[in-house]
Length: 74
Length: 172
Image (cartoon, rainbow over all chains, first blue to last red; front, side, top):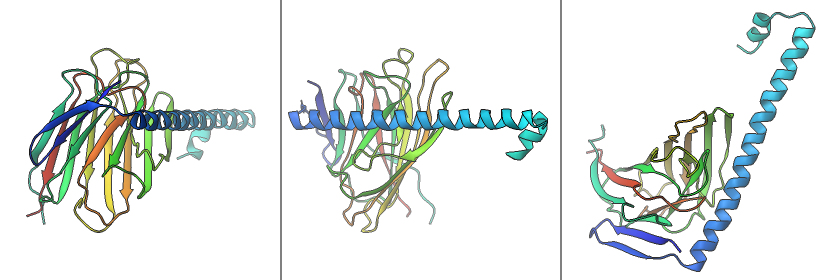
């Protein structure tokens, strides 16, 4: 069990106490939510990159040069 | 009116060992803005661990939490969970040993009765191909003045030798 550290900014007193069961549970819920969000964001970024590569390949197949394809996104 | 240079209000470190959370409480109400500078690492995870923030013990009044991150994985944007208030990715245990993320947290008009705007810059240190940079903002929609702020890592604990500095900035 980790400690919780608090500094009182008015007095400078530092208090250290064990983390409560409720605090541990709340952190576990937050951790799962954060992991889910991070995975979703990375998956979305990967999909965008894959879609972009597929679109560029299709444009190249139509005869556009690499410079012409790049100009479309400027 | 121009802002004055920051005044150190308080500091904390975890030199004695990893901790679950750190809190600045009873924050003086005599400044205009607050700035927090952190050097921080989490005990688990890697490739970016979310740093959470909690204001006055609860994030019930959070009404926006946006982040933008970049890394070798690509760029990502999104809304963070308002209940978690996370908007900075920090160094984790899977990253290079003895490296720490550099995070700055700026809180505007923290004593105001209007919504408080906060923005963050976070730089995960990792001497490898993957290291996140994040920019984020939070709007805390409450008429209450900010009196305490708590930081936790979403994965594991805040590692040993992390440091936190709270500064007050006045405009007069």
